[in-house]
Length: 153
Image (tube, rainbow, N blue to C red; front, side):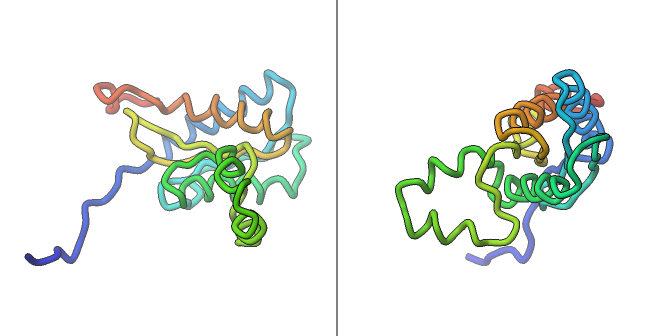
């Protein structure tokens, strides 16, 4: 049995899809009155689109980028799920948080289309709960059923 030298590429978010996610997240943040930074990344964790709302903290931009990267780097695991996974393992809990770009609090969620992870959105600037809510509102803008994937989000 031979092992093929290549693999099938994973589907990933396009710029148009990323803009739909970004715009929906920013609109939700504006509705609830929380100025945030939003970053939308592809499945490799590379930034496709981002925004810093008026009044959002500059330092929060890098946190939003890292939240999206964390989700993408772990195949769609939301950042808010991390603490429950590591809380009972002290050496892991204390050590893993020293990894560059890993974020273990709310605000990073996967972007799915037809149930498949195609990217990630990271939000920073509010509380962890607000960031998660805004990120989820953004991600929902791209989640089309599999039979409607060819339509713009």
